[in-house]
Length: 474
Image (cartoon, rainbow, N blue to C red; front, side, top):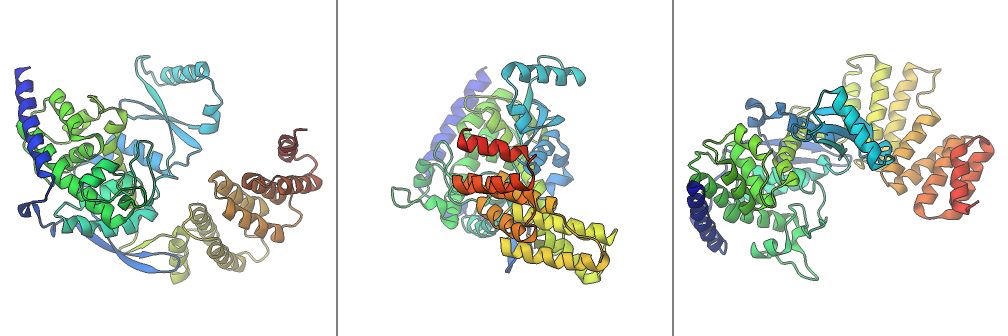
């Protein structure tokens, strides 16, 4: 108890000194990060090729962090669409089952508790163990869109003498690919800085200007926050606990991330509570299971998310030796077009190319016109292999339109359904899709008109019947 009190007094003094230092960046704080592992890749979009820099964090794999259940769990969540959810053990993040979000939302509290109990029973889990249901976050973690901001922020962090590893880690998990996104507590920009914090680090934030949404300014603010507050505070709390560290150790960086997210005071409380004798993976895993003050579930998850994001991002940028294809369809079809061969059945491979282009379109990676032109190109190639067989059917095309509606991408859905109307004028599904699109656009009369066209082609179409009843009140 006395050791904790002494630690607290020492840390408080150190944190006060660090706070006094925050008005300036001393020259000796400027560091060279020329040895930080940075990889350069040609990023290929639908209309340009840009050389970009990224951080290569091989320590994740050499030290085995990617095998921990928590990062593996979040990797799945980041790749899962929001209409699906994973049921897991709260403490260990062990995955138990997957469930439809729509099905889960229909259950009342009693039914949900009963469902959790059945999961515990089938997996021999005690009643005292908490079971969580977590929806997919694929629509939030748009890693392809965050690439340019990572590239630009790496240079800003280096210029400010701050390890650029933090730039990539924060950008991958805070607000990936989004420049102007305010949180419920008022944080904004790609680095999600609070107003007071941003102003203290030299940014202008007022009623007319918010430099948090400017990538260079936001990166400058975040790097200053790290160098003036987060890193010194983390070092001070470890020094006072007599825990040795190296600033490039992955576990140390993860602890700094916690200070960035939860505040150094909360992290210091966690360290005091743990009272560690050494750092490393075991300390971080213990941090994940420890609460203190405002350091709760979201704070525990923060470095787990960073590890998962790095793993998923690495899988994407390391697929090819020197290039990153933002368009998965192009990556597959270019490989086929180059050698006129496929690693398996040509028709199946080209069919998967179409699926990739559809995913690219739904994810917003490519515009409608590019999508249509590429689908036609692949279909022409397929028709040469199967001249008497249709390469893509009406139901399949309409399914893409409904995926767009589910993602609230109404304009793209409208373009696709209108295109399908020309291709399949006798399809009741097309008109039902148009009805759904107009309804989502708030155009009631046009929605009813298309629902009626759908019913005329298929009188047994109950979905259109119910939609008309809802709109007309009959």
